[in-house]
Structures are given as structure tokens and as C-alpha cells.
Length: 549
Image (cartoon, rainbow, N blue to C red; front, side, top):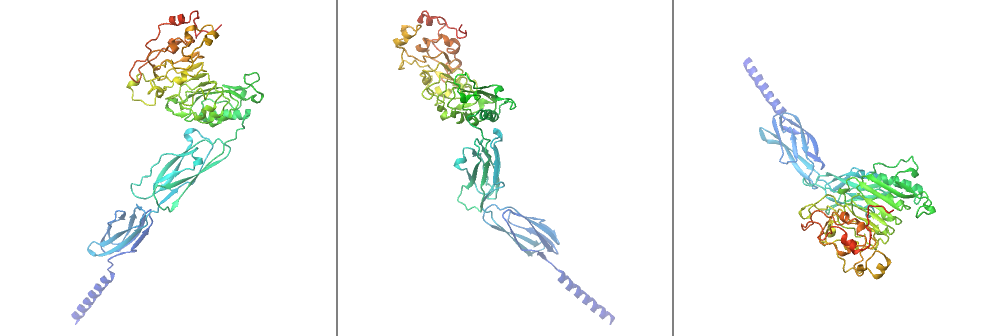
């Protein structure tokens, strides 16, 4: 009886134990079966509950699970990459019992696609009216998933430009951060200016967001025009813009400034309204990468200005800019060692120029604006030493843009005739350039010496009658150290001022080889001037280096 009771109790206990195990069996469960996330991606946590070993898998490369397997309960991180395109996408994460593949739970991951958008971190930029050349720029960070063009209002394009940029969409349409550098120019006016810059998608797409950039520039300090005070402010501003190494002391009166001359009574050209204003100013030893500063236009009483010695001038391709062309009263102007390759088209407005020195620049050819019609009063033109570097043999060089007026004669192989027809010139210097070819004989030139010319001058021989009357007023004519070849023309060998020109130094002497490989030099260069003085019988020898008594 006791045995039967024991067995019955044992079986009951076993049965109860079996029922308890079934009740505790968990399998695999998760605390969510769906994840929704934005296009930027991110991490979501899922709690896995299991009573056995499990494994997490996905066939979608943009989804990562960590940890990817385990035993029992664990916290799983599901890492979702940022979207690649603008269409939504969907993926599956599967949690499986490793010992029973039929026992699994699926989690659906839904991700939005990126909307097309062009956005800015900073939508408003403020700049000053002036800064040093290398500091006149700012960077804008553009977030975008579409390539774009930059649209600057037409009225602002003169002072605001965008640099090169590239939108890389090689990994799909997720937003990228593109840096765009904008460069701005000096504001010369005493009013603020503004530009609203737009970013236009290159493709036909609908943008969910399209930011614009507002650029605001401060007004300039006003300069009082046509006044002594305005002149002093302009001088200081020009020196600042040029980055001149040594400027003027502002605690000194302008009367005491070096390289500045003020108008005083008794000076040639003086008028009462000019009294105390700037007559002459010299700017030297500076560093600029631009044309002449806008403040130049305020020096409306000056009759001579000098700009000389720009740092690294041989590396620049500059134009004068428009501001100097507003000074129609100028009589003498020097822009030398600056880095010019051209003159502004409005340079022709300087009708009163008598002397122009644009030597030691980077001119490839003589600026088109330089004609005797545009400058009727000009008598001295200096256009020498425009070589960026020394090239001995033009026929054996691969270098380009080396200056020296090379383009002037690389096709024609003839000296620029229009300069020889500039009758008013008493000074023409073209030395140390790369002019090549022959000097025109000018036999077809309309202007000839007449009997009236001979009668009016004691030293002119009768033999000149009927010969070309070339540069009749010239006193200084230098063309040495070019690549000129051929014969010296008769008009030059018999020119009335030849002995004054110091011809064996400044005319006849050439060097190197021209583009055809010819050794530079003239085939009929005289040994001395004996024949010249026989032609000018009774003429006294003129030494250009000796001062007249």
C-alpha cells in the first residue's frame, strides 16, 4: 500500500514538473516588429528574448546588426546607413533560433528617401568695404544632393564672384557638403550693397528646400571730392589698397609727405582752386594683384602720377582698370614694374597725356588703344623691358607668354610701323623686348622732306628732299637688345637726330636669335658715323651724354 502511494506521488510530481517546463518555454521574441527611420539613418535598439541560441541576419547591405548572435536575452543594435537615393526603401532583419529554423521573428525596416534639397548653414554673410587682396573672400558650406549652378545678380557680378566647386554624387543622392568660395571686391561708394545669390539645380527636380545666400557689404568711408582733405584720404587709401611697404605718416601735414607735391602759386598750370591739392604723387614698392585702386579717381587735380615696383610683377596679367581713366587732366603717367598686359579700353580718355611710361611690364603686344589719334598731345612713350624672363634664342623655346612684345612681330616679322608714323613723338623707347624682323624702309610713307623743311633748318642737306620724313621730332629712339635683323633703312641712317640717339648703344646693338633662328643684328651697321657726317656736311658732333653749356 505504501509502495503504490509512493509511485502515485512520484508520477504526479513528474507530471507537474513536465507541465511547468512547457509553461516556461519562451522560444524567440522581440519587442517590436517594425522600424521606421528617416533618410539620414541611425541606430535603433531591439530587445531579443530567447531560451536558446539565436542568430540575427539580413540580406540588405545598408543594415547592420550588433551583436549578430547570442544565447538567451540580449539588446540588439540595428544600425541603418543613410539613404542613397530619394526613393524610400525597405529591408528585413530576421532573428532565428539556431536549433529550430522554423522558429523566427522578422523585423521590417522602412527608410525614407532623401528629398532633393540645397541648404546652407549660414544664409547671410556680411563683409566690409575693404580688405587686403588675399582676405577678400569667404567660404559657404552647401549641403546638397543635387548638382547646382550659382546665380549671382547681374548688378552684383562686378564685385561678387564664385570660385570653382564640384558636387560629387558618386555614392547616390545622400546630401554632401560642398565648399564654395566667394570673392568680393572693394566697395568704393558710400552706400551699402547687397546681393541675393541663388543655387539652381542643374536637373529638373522639385526641391523640398532651397536656401538663398544674402551677401551684404558695408559702405565705404566717403571721400570729399575735389578737396585737399579728399586728396589726403585718397592717397592713404591708395597706399593701403596697393599694400605699399612704406606709407605716409598721418600725423604729419600732407605738405611734408615724401613723394607728394602740392600745387602752389607760380607753378605751371596753377589755378586758385588747385591750391594745396595734390599735383604729383609717387607710389612705389608695393604688393598688389589688381589694377589701380578705385581711390585714384579722386586725385582730380594731379597732373603727374607714378606707380612703380610691384612685388612679383612678372607673374601677373593685369590691366590698369577703369579708375585711372577718369583723370583726363593728367599730363604725365608712369605705371612701371606693375604686371600689366593691357590698358583699359577707356584709357583713351587721357587725352592730355604728354608722357606715358609703361615700361617694365608684361605686354605681349602694343596695346591697341595706343594710337596717335587717341593721344594727340603725347610726345614721350616708354615701352621698354617688358620681358618676363630672358630668352636668348626664340627659335628654340617652348615657353609661352614671356612678354617682350613678342606677339607684335611673331607673324609679320616687321617692326610696328604705326609707331614710326607717330609724328609728335620726341621719345620712343622699345629696348630689351623681343621685337624681330626688319625695320620698314618707309619708302611709301606719304610724308616726305620738302624744300620748305630744308630752308627752315640750317643743318638739313638738300639730299633729304623727297625722302621719308619719319619721326621728325625724335630725340631719343632706343630699340637695342631686341631680335631685329635685316638692313637698317636709309631714313634711320640719315635721320637728322641719329647722332643724338647714341645709335651704337641704343639702336644698332641687338642680341640673340629670332624665331626663324637668325642671329639678331643688322647687315649694314656702320662702323662709325663718318659717312653720316659727310652727308650732314658742317654738322657738329652731338654727344647725347654731354650737357649743353
